Image: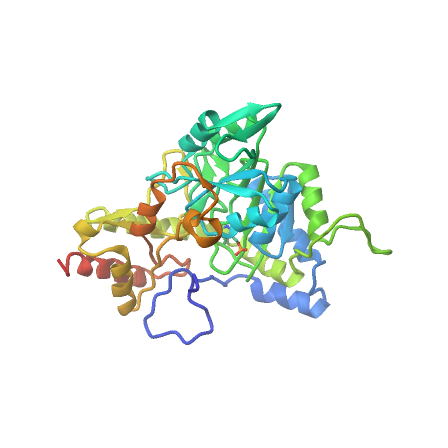
Length: 399
Ligand SMILES: *Cc1c(COP(=O)(O)O)cnc(C)c1O
């Protein structure tokens, strides 16, 4: 099932998609410039500019553009030299991409629980795991249950909201762990005033079609660390040591973004503050409307967070609302409104069910009850009112 309605497909009259791209700035002009000048491939002024704009926006020293967010995560793990057989902590409630990249390098995920108010990785349980379920032996932290070395933590800032990262950063410093932020869903969000993507050692962004800003497909590695940035760039460009003689000292990858995609990215970056303001307005409007709708709990924003509300999500209490999240999804679909559950918890998916999970308890409930609602940047007031009114009509209709 695709995350978003595909533009270009025939749109049923009045259909309200979940989350579609907004293309309304200089995209056409910049792409035309690439085509007119012939700079269509992986080198070009827009790639450099997109990297600079992103680094400036998040506040990191370096940015390396990549073909996808998944490629960015793979590069970040390799740049940080996480080794096969080592472990990386990651939330069980996430899109599977970050977990897959942990397996790409032969490392193992350690699945962590989500906390109930923001659905983000439970920082308290992360610290509890590191301090009570692991042993410090000869300068390495060993997971007592698996006997493997814990090397990194990958907080995934899901749905536009940051993970409560300070306790995680403190524990990481204490046990010499690398913190790789998956910021693919939360570009522009802030944690205690600090930018998401500038909180750990290295971070990754995505410009897939349903993300806050898009290049069609694309990603970025961002960091303050020159060695990590240099290595990410090196591995993303086929680990080429001599471009004339084609000398490669290592196995490399072709993970570059094209200039045409970066051109779209530059135009999108010019609009990012407007997009975020719109996402916040949509969330505020839903929040007000649902405050007294029985059985619907809107997504929360922690005191210390400035969420960008990338994907607006509610919890549906079947006993009170009168139907569960999946029945509600079908009823909305019948009325031309697209909605979608969160991801199946990754720790119980086939490729991952034998990996170690630490006290993962809440994610199954969140998976059962959560439903994301239409929240495209281009959502009109009339469309949003229709979503809200429809939920109001559906509450307890089957009770
Ligand atoms: C979208 C996403 C990715 C991967 O990004 P792609 O650009 O689609 O490869 C990684 N992690 C999370 C949490 C995502 O939502």
